[in-house]
Image 1: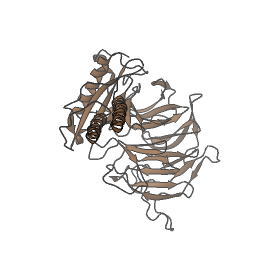
Image 2: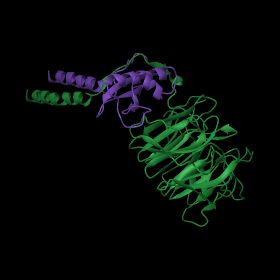
Image 3: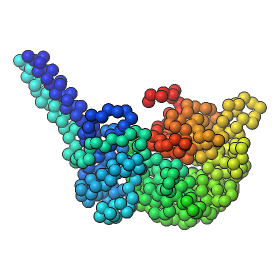
Image 4: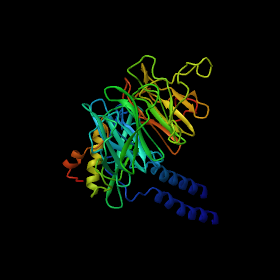
Length: 113
Length: 339
């Protein structure tokens, strides 16, 4: 009986452990084509606001704790703002563009310097 | 039974440990699925003719040319955690073939080409405030494909192209924001050369001079405490009757160079074709040794930097694009195609 219990426990721990190997949010692993990469995003709280992370194949690629392109050290005022810009970065990468954000793109999202 | 109790107790202790280790209370997921693209279509921070500078344990990469547009963005690279962070845009013209150096804890970016004009403006980047300040223009005149470096917290710009190939040499004092002309390099005029600094001396070599087929083969060292300040070292091509230089093929332009573990490295660039062979310079003996080639695609107009004795080579261009955007550089390791 105790052996069974150990087995269950080991299994449980392994499942818990494996679920946290991805630093960022869970992404679909249904596609395993080596010619493809998987792009993910998440938001995180900073001292004074919000930032976002972009993952490539579940590895951190961009961790944006301040507003890109703008001078200064301000974070995004809201999680919504961080999400909108992260979505913009993902779209750029999907369109085979650089992940660079431009000031006018932030302005069109009502994010000001 | 006693044993079972122990296990139960242990599991109660262990399981929450695992759970707490992966609870990122502040991180929430947004757009996470269905974002697959072909690996070859991943563009990254890709560019050629950009600049890089290192402040503390972070590297900065900015400006350049992506094949369509000149760029004015700036990215910070964290080599320990291996991620990028987009910083404040350069307020001046987006540009390629600019130069950068670090002095007094700030980065400086200047000169270059905006697609129409050669440039002579100089910008100071403060990493603490993430902001740029325009400094006095470079008095050496607008140019691109110069080299820049710093020695003992003074900045230097040399060589380049202003309509003619150049070999003039200028010193920048960050305290007074002034440029002062110094004695020029000897030897060839050149553009798209490299500079690397070791023990407060700067080494300038490679580059192109009016497309001469033989290439620029002289190597000069700048020592601000010496008279004269420039001394020529041995040639970087096979010119001697001795055997040490028989295999030398260091000549190239638009290469990258940096110092790591007490040795100078020159890699990538072009000399008729784009290159990825790597040469190591032994400062004490003034000799070059061929090392393991850069494992990425051969490229020109790339960037190289060294942070905490780890070298990186990134971006650049060749006939086939795009590249992996950054690769750590292991000149001493045997080649392994699978890593």
